Image (cartoon, rainbow, N blue to C red):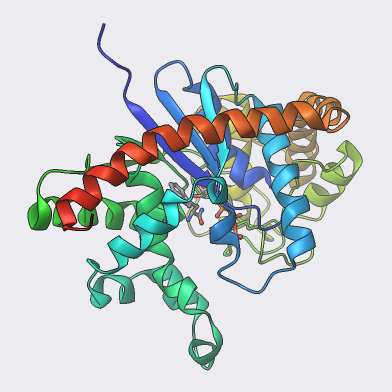
Length: 330
Ligand code: ATP
Ligand code: LTN
């Protein structure tokens, strides 16, 4: 029997997880668990690259880990762990930082977006070097496949380039990973502003649907979602509001673009929004029920994360001894 390909992906405990995280990442991780050998990581060291509150960080981390299990990440089939529980991540990040050309980091669009204008003087050096920590996360586990939302494509490509560069400089140590991005749902946009991505940390009023939002709140947020004044319901890149709503529908209903346009022909935005609210609430309700059960039993979550860290650490330690050997350290 050939071993299943290794998957690694990460999510930051930087705030309330939202529908974009679910449709762009978590749901795909869950659905593909049998195809791959899975490692999923709550990347707390990535969440400290911007200003944060330590008490909130801890609470966010537990909430996120419990939600991942509630969404269907199965600890028997996937290694679920917290980044800071496996010290090898930061060790490898430093070694990779020393093999990363500054120019490669300067080209990262996320850093450019987050450091515009006078911000560059204030943002942390960690925000700049963060893609090397992300590369370390991926490369430590001989990862082949990295399923992410669209916004992370450039960072995974950097990890791939760094693996190839390292192998060229020091010998064949790393597996070269590939990003995997789904066609539908890879970039869920904000409900209040469909030109901005739905995001945990950049929350405008009505920007996100939280995975723990009540059905009533979900209905209300969709009812207020920004569209346009054209009225008819079709996919159109020049009409980001209605296209975003249709795309969310598509991810959950599984209907094709043509089927969706036919379904809403001659109907108004109100109908689409109401139906969407119902679809999303229906998808989130069972997740919320499992989440509540898990929060009532904190020891189970502790055990899942402790087991995950032990499994992850065993793999990471082996990779690190190859890396140190190749680099002439120890
Ligand atoms: P932050 O706002 O703190 O940067 P985030 O909400 O962008 O966080 P992450 O924890 O950085 O989320 O990302 C976890 C996964 O969710 C990644 O694979 C990312 O690509 C995906 N993701 C994040 N936002 C969206 C979105 N709006 N649509 C689709 N996928 C998304
Ligand atoms: N940088 C990513 C989160 C992340 C990640 C990873 C994703 C950290 N390490 C490794 C995939 C693989 C983000 O901001 N979404």
